[in-house]
Image (cartoon, rainbow, N blue to C red; front, side):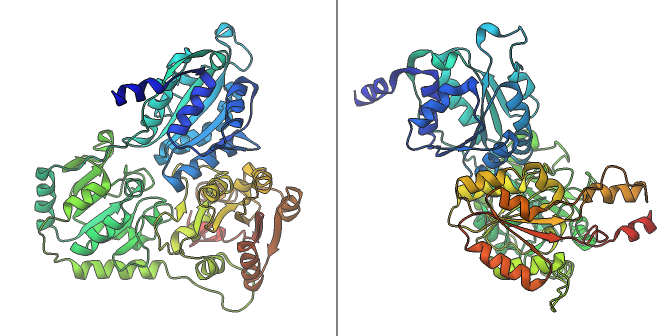
Length: 558
């Protein structure tokens, strides 16, 4: 009887807009990112009346979507972002695509044209569910207010279960004002499927025959909170671990079983480790283009055990010898019961030595011109182990990826989609999720200028992120490829000089330009105690286009 009464109490008459907020409350949403628009004013008004939800109003929808995506990565809860109609939706599409490729849970609410005006090319009209169909996990337009609880709660479920991802909900503005009797379901519970005993036995049989086994660990481990289980599993069987692209924090980088990171500019020795492995255990990774070096890294001679929460990922790139559809953490725990005697310790030690050699920093110990190597060394020295680092797209990130040692879980947030403009707004989202942690973003001058306006957002909400800008006055990654294929022909990649310090001050943030180790060290320490955001500009040597080659060297090799 009490259950019947409880269900009846969940039935309430309210507008479509208020029902959306009720769904957010059930999912314990506390932050919503947006650029406001008239098409969804009722939703904004309902948020105003809800004390448990903070609204973060950004300067650009792309920035807002990156904030929501970074927030979601830091919390492993859905990032919620809102915008208006076709124009706002188009602007935030970059964040939706990033969430899709990065398997990040996100729920996007987009105001839509009045139902009576649809099909007439109404003001800013776009068929939003079709527009986002290819880059979202699910899309829907809610035409009837009474279906808001059903469809919004379904959206939160789809965003979080299986392989997480973004969902997009189109909201016709007239529907938001309609009152209806609403019935709500419970908060989403995420299924955590385990492998079967037979599958665990097959893993055991393959490991018994292995000579050089290797784990490639991806975002699925992080999403399942399986980092400690991965450490326990690797240690028990002395298995080496390599991180998939931009999943650096999946395993402690200073651990003797960590053997590197697969990504852009990966050292030759680290790639050799993967090629030498006779058994690959790919867990929670889709074996992306970048991770597999354009799908060339693995071979048919290797035995592949592929473990993923999404059945569609198995065999999508490489056909596995064993494909297991299961939660990463649950699988690692189940595999702790296998009985295998490792006989590959010598090979693992050799591969670890190869990684240590490749990741050794060359440091400028005197106080001369600041180098990118110095920046990474000083970040390593002064940042607490639980600091969270975000980065933009660009060659400057090669120094971070190759040399920074991530020691704690969930301390890195980067776009596997390679989106420019990501670093700063993602850092803002992360800092809102983890206000007690130091949050540092790394950006090039090209990427920084794409979302630099969000410094004002950070200042307005007193979000003290630290933004490092590596300035070489060019789109460096594209320039590198240009020099590889069309040497000495510079087309479209040179950029003008920006006064980032003056720009930061105009956006109510701190700003400092540094040229030496001492200046950077002082600026970093001050930024870590600041109550407002700080921009630290670093003049990057134009000739040193990557961690390993200069422009001249690339030209000579072309």
